[in-house]
Amino acid sequence: MPLVAPVTQHCSTFLMWPTMNSFKLLMGSFRMLHSTLRGNDVQALRMLRLRCKTKNGSHIMQGLTHQSCVKELKSKVQELTGIPCDVQKIMVGYPPSSLDLRNGDAHLKDYPIKSGDTLIVEEEKNKPKPQDQSSITKVPRLEASSPTLARRVVPADNSCLFTSVFYVVEGGVYDPACAPEMRGLIAQIVSSDSTAYSEAVLGKTNEEYCDWIRRDDTWGGAIELSILSKFYQCEICVVDTQTVRVDRFGEDAGYQKRVLLIYDGIHYDPLQRVLPGSDDPPHTIFSTTDDVILAQALELADDARRKRQFTDVSRFDLRCMVCQTGLVGEKEARQHAKVTGHTNFGEV
Image (cartoon, rainbow, N blue to C red):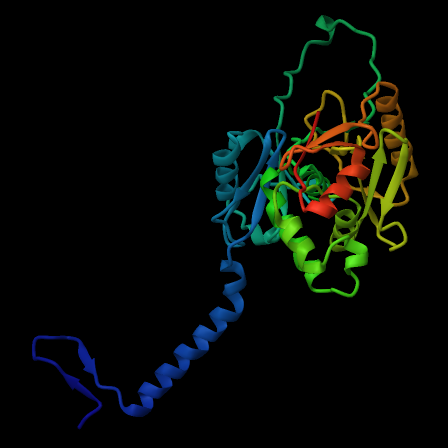
């Protein structure tokens, strides 16, 4: 049978009848093409996991790959934040640096954007129009404001420690929904090492502790801070407003990064460095060689102490909300919890 046969007298095309060998060659070429595409393009087509953060909050950004163009990125940002495309200032990295996004057709693979990044977005203020020098009235020059360390208040919902730690290690991302995930993370770490996290360390059996910390009505403290310090590979410094001291978790581990919390006896808040009157994002991650920031944190704690902004947990009156027993101070509350298993207390 001939390899090529005419279909009809009136048809100028021919029907190709491939042999088995030519079919195998065709399939081999297809496999090579597929392998090349898979090797080169799968990475580019994989969805990017990105966060978008503005002064008003944080958003999860979905639907972008490294093949997406700048116009698509700006459109997503506008959709999430309401900031128009033409006045967006998008920054990435630490410390944050601005991206040159003037070419709307450029692909994201050409920028230092990777999965897991948080994009910091600001609205660029309109530049003033040039004025005639003769019409300008000179005013005294004001000195630029200096960054200040400030408390960022989070809800007193039994999970303030977890919300505060997440806020500072994520560079100023406020997400109260993070607490269950962080509680689960701590339980997983503790359950995986029953030797290091024994009953002598935890005050209860390893299994009991894991069940306890997962509950949303329990408070975190020193144990949880030490675990989170190790997990996030950073020094967590807690300044106490009653004693004006700083407790440094991970101090001897040689970490490069430091974050700060303030504690008033019953509640944790994150500390952040902000520039007054500026829309710049807060600064929550510092170098462990920056002792100035520790001094500023202690000044903040001392100011709160002078204003009596603390709770003396050794003396305040409590009531067990389970059996209504009256108690005085944290020590009696801990003893009551150990004997009865009750852990829900209210201040009288």
